[in-house]
Image (cartoon, rainbow, N blue to C red; front, side, top):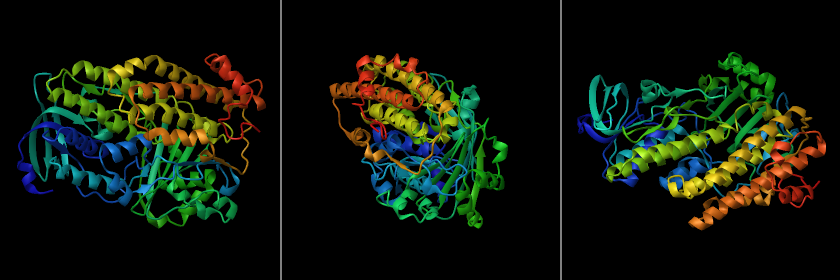
Length: 546
């Protein structure tokens, strides 16, 4: 960037350490809320970054997409420079060379609420441009050398080096968006393990990989309208792992393998050659597609035990905050990374706005942090000890259906209706949300038990999520503008829907596995709801009336 930027005033209201996705979106959101706020973003990478930048987090889902599109106002860029996503898609294809003859889970048509596949290089270049256009001081190619945190009465001090020059600045607020470097986390000893032990490798191929090319079966190809499976986040799943295929607008394709550390040790896949040998065994059609493109490999990396928590992410008293991977990280399976960036950035923006208005932030920071950690723990339940289920064509489609219902019906409602910062509303919702969490925990345990006895039948069929009217409607309703009363009614409706879905899952599973113990789950269900499911008057599942 231009040299004169280095001579800008050394004081900022906010210094953001890290100018990737989390840091730049935070800067934009802060500027949108408080245009006069002085913000300095210090980024290690030199801009512009290359297209197909080597970062995870390319697949967005509804909360993140809503944040980018509506809250930050990036719809034009997303529509013009990124790829609209054709939802998630799952193939139970472990060891198979006939993708068209395995169970496929996904939607046959694009559902109402959009999400996007993000080329992180293109996206972050645009975010940096917009931030500077709005008055953010953006310093790229800079390495932060030291961070000195002030207490409630003092400013924070940051020292960085750029172009051989040492620069010093101070700020009232310090926001750490430095990713896994975790500047503040390391300094304050905030790192925290969780119980989800999984590893990931990923790489980019400078070519399009289209699963439709793996079959000439016209009937199979016609299952989707349009015939654009390549625009989905395609999951090739097996016991203990999943492999992803994500297209990028630059023309590259992102490929990854994510695996339970106990079932598929990282030592089996931590180089490209090892990963290819592993794919040859577990996903031979993907291996074949990559084998002819070895010369188009752009990069390769891996993370060991990628999921982690954090002891603290917001300090209202001392005016610092963590966002993105500088705080915590769940699992890439349902692409929640940009969701949690959206949520944490929204909390941080609200805290800084309160502080700028002369309000007390300490109590609010504690409340927001409690809610944020609760969301993290609730979502972590979807992944922990669940990877064995992934290769089960009977149980996994039901798990995905349940997890989506929980996500669209609860998580998305809270964010889309801007309730996460509404403390009185969240207090009013406490008992309902607690009930929802209890039934979700019991469902995850039940799915695990079902998987242990499942025959894992894998017929050549498409389980079409778009064919379930209630499911498509759930997606469509995400953009409803609700009053406070309507929001409460919506959450009550979603709790009932989860109960009805749980009841039908129990009934359907017991048809083939009558000895399956569902007592803990059934004990949470209203007798009438369970009776309706037994009478098949509630048909939420694929083929439930069969």
